[in-house]
Length: 324
Image (cartoon, rainbow, N blue to C red; front, side):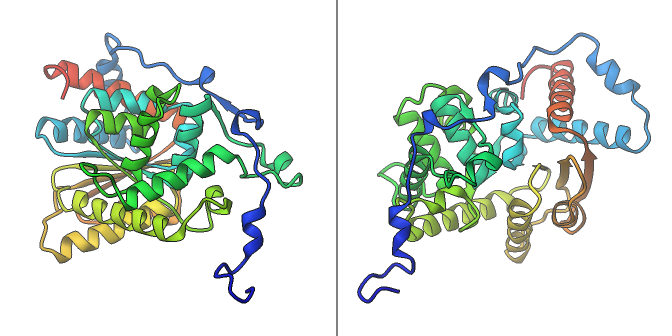
């Protein structure tokens, strides 16, 4: 450490940044999914699936989501970044608008991709190319915007709530981001739904930026953890769906479950589900096996499994008398 300088590594303030719009990206909103209306006969297709293994689990998850919304209980989607990177933001937003998803929980990587997609319509660096050039993770606008969101989440303006996720949504709406309609946090704020964001300090590219303030980041993240504790305390009869996050969100969920039980809340009627491309230890253990209630697992590619789940749910909702 340099004498009077409080920073452990002062050179961090001198990293070279580049404009986000000029950075090569692998994912474009041009390739995102569409969200068709319920297809005639899709409910019959779901009913035709075998009542064995994944067929049974898929039907159970659809029925649980529909039942939760009919009973005005929460349906939470806790999502890793890959869900957005494979073009599924329109699907998640459609389910939010239909009243199926009541709350969204993101890790910081998901928030980063969401911001970039909303701002320039592209995201996902080619790490193999950018890293050797010393450019990986140094898009100027991304680091500065997430730092502003952390500050806003830690010290919200009058009338706003504490928390990182809601602050990011407000930042995108205030900036009139060109593709804000494809931002999950921005749409959650617009709709008045719950949205939280959970960073892991040092694991996200924005923590390499000079604008990152640890105090703001920590305060905003802690506020959102407490927001999740409040959400989970009200999850009895609801459905928590972990999609594509192997570590951060399953760990946060388990601690929130512990807080809820410690405070005397009943979670025995909660349904939890883990949807991922492979079985991951923490997601299987912390989301499916350890919490009270019933735990479900579905393994498959997000870009195929989630459109099938969406169509099954909205078809069932329509058959049972309209949207939630």
